[in-house]
Length: 344
Image (cartoon, rainbow, N blue to C red):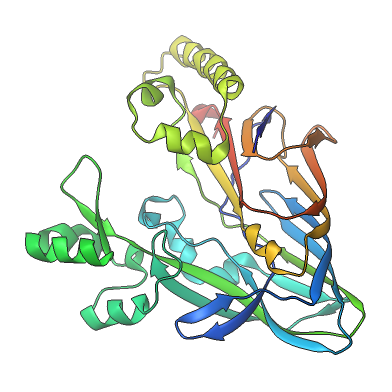
């Protein structure tokens, strides 16, 4: 997919945003997403911003019988190195942080909440939570500072090798340290009745959890010596035009910092928003009418994400419209923000 670049404004603090409805069933090992062959998604209207995420669906039961099913709204899994994130402690209480609400045909829906533990990058793995409990390791390892600090020291090399082979640990690049290699994915769930031959409207809203990094991978110095930038670049479809715009702004801010007599360099942050879109393909047929709006709030940041047909509809909002859309990728949004640290 090609990428869209725009000049955005100061101040967007992005978050790992969240997900797409998907038909689901609870089986061994936790929540499993399943395909539904009689419920069609007639439309999806998705709005992504720092302060609020909303999504509105229209579903139709194409069969002659009522269908009752468990529906899941899966959140992106927490990354394995979540302990390095700015707001890692806030991930301990997603339900309160998200303020997640669902309305079906204008009436509030009763919601459930499940957390599924898998190996990083291997969502099919089962029994990880039970295994961690058996060996006495904390599932939310970022809450146990001693565990993270002592992990590499208290295990023998043979134990480390065994846990790496099992997938529970990974060796950090360019160091002798080892880190947890499991992740947690939360699912907001509800029981839903789809009346025979009828269309219903489902609306979700929630407040994204703040996240991001101070500095990051975009500086010219980092890009020249990094083994990981190519992967980062592909994830957000960062192209030469984006990098040219970043470098121009970076050099201008460096001159400003030097003029102020500051020697700590350019102040900037990288923010990310992720949205689980692929699960929208679990319904019958394609999404007949898909609309995405991304609101950047201000006009001078740098934005990159993988999507075709992007149209600017306001100074801060960009729209994508698609018909008969079958998503094959999730949405990954990158925002680079420059700021004056003296103004904070």
